[in-house]
Image 1 (cartoon, helix red, strand yellow):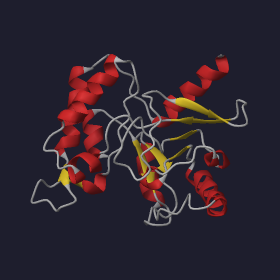
Image 2 (cartoon, one colour; image 1 turned 180 degrees about the vertical axis):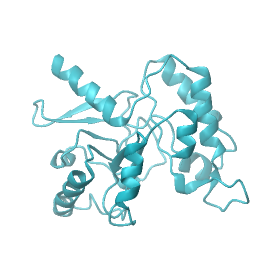
Image 3 (tube, helix red, strand yellow; image 1 turned 60 degrees about the horizontal axis):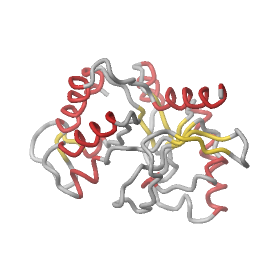
Image 4 (tube, helix red, strand yellow; image 1 turned 90 degrees about the vertical axis):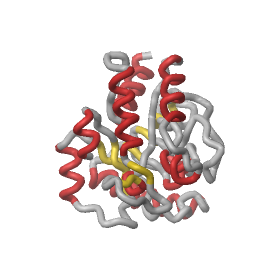
Length: 226
């Protein structure tokens, strides 16, 4: 949070309510600082989509947390997804997909760098899907051991050239903020700060920096206006 504020950025923090202790004070602090709160499943146990029965049982609890936390966005753990089932959630948007990422457990990409509507029963009722379009930090730096952010910068430049949406999913728990000896599942936080600096320096005045709920609202209003 501090890193982003120093560089003039705000993002959405997605929490797993039944796996971690999420204090009301933390949620309030994030919201007051201009960040967004999103829901990241319930348990992060890989079972959300195991059956329709399990999903429906959890959907009721997920909807209650969405109401309590005043959330409009959802992201499935491990990027598992079933876009049709997600109609059971009271959400404005979902971000459980990606344009392309063959290294995910469910590697089916949606093949676009733009938001898109997921309508229900052929009508207008539904939600907006926001796929991430820049590789996740865990994949690049933990699994693939990339030493720098060249891939992030190259993908961002390509997205900008094509007028798309740059959406990056990072994990603060994998970042080493102390810059001391890192464990096997950590990478230096300067990778993220350097990327934000690159965005700000190379694209100042050329991009629209908003929270996920804002782009989802814009996309919905655009559709309704027709």
